[in-house]
Amino acid sequence: MPTVARSRTLPVDRGELWQLVSDPHHLPRWWPQLERVEDVSEDGWTKVLRSSRGRLVRADYSRVDAEAPHSITWRQEIEESPFEAVLSDSVIHIDLEPDGESRTRVELTAEQKLRGSYRFGGFMLRRATRRQLDEALDGLERAVGAA
Image (cartoon, rainbow, N blue to C red; front, side, top):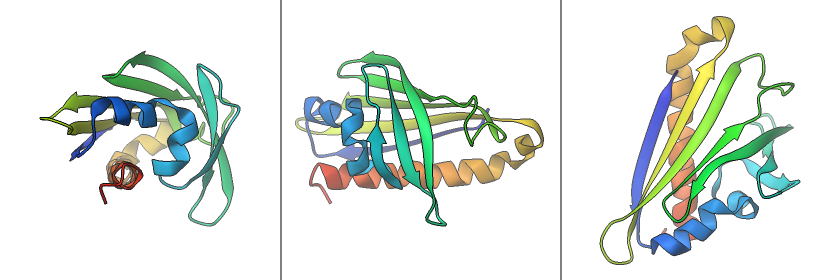
């Protein structure tokens, strides 16, 4: 299962950062290519993403685990989605650790399992995922006013 982890230390208190990463309503402020979120409930939501070709793509997510203000995990609902042909599993972990006074180390980890012949493209998926997680960290930096 290709796993990619990226981290960055941001000049913001962990509690404030937790409010941003734990609420799906805030995702458009920092997650790359995300236009909006819909159907937000306590345990799930739908991301409406804009593809590189300008098309809107919907992706459903569910919250798997949350331990405030330390970590949160969400899983993409793959079955009956446009991603079903390529992925059999996709999970995002966000870990927040204090790093001195009013600083937080953020680590984003993506675990994805490719389906069928797509398994041979793991290196391309890792590269794209690395870029996506770096863009998400850039978005968090902008959202907290550090950039």
